[in-house]
Image (cartoon, rainbow, N blue to C red; front, side, top):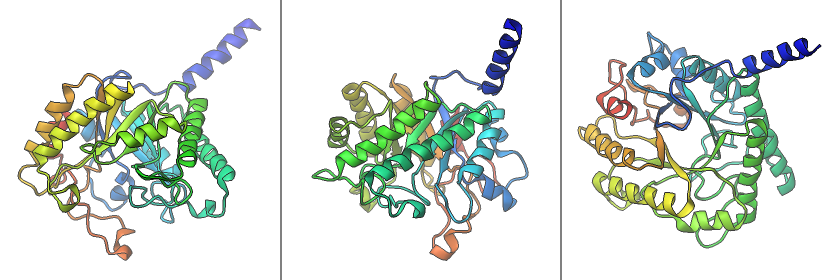
Length: 341
């Protein structure tokens, strides 16, 4: 009987830890968000395995978004699982980015999923819990253990609006912090060692008020995630990329010091046709690799090239994503190689 119990226990261990990563947990993450990859492959954009190609360039981590129920089927649970299994087989560490929305969640859009529209706060809390459990248990059943999970995407203004909307002056902090705490708890139920990330945009922007309010109202996180898109534009006050990189470096150090946790650059990108993009990335990488508690960096959708755009962009009148990091020949660019070395 003892022998049978031992064999059964061993089988559980082997099936739950089937995949092995190329680099150890906690080491520097050189990652790519490849959430569009399935659709791009359907459109015959690659004549090779993109994940293996990026692995050969030095990629050791893959970030994948999950929408609740987007109408196209892309970036839903099944699509994420298929990409996650491929990434795990390629030895990649995995970051799961749960949007808690049916489409892109960001500082301007945090739309409640259609199926959750009529929920009160307590029911919404339970929906966050059940969705988090569902996504992570689906990975666990396939023997995939993600290293990180985001509870929301770019949420400086909260999530699940209007119920969880917040700002610097006021807002529903108890509700928003409650959502993050519930997602945190659910994630730890499935993977006790998973690193839970709360993610905001504008790495160059100091937001002490956000983290202070989150903490005061019971929000939970293990790591802070930041987005960084260093290009001059009206929405960043006309700052140069040099200024943005310098301010981001200062802010990362401040967050590490004040909140005693590591910081991940969960998204980065530069304009593909900008001749300074290699210099921009090289400068930023040099700055953040010198920070001991900066955990790594993920380029957002670098595989986009050749004017490709997802089918859903066409009826919306949206153009192609302009910050991919592949050449017009469909190969990783020098900008991406600088990041992955």
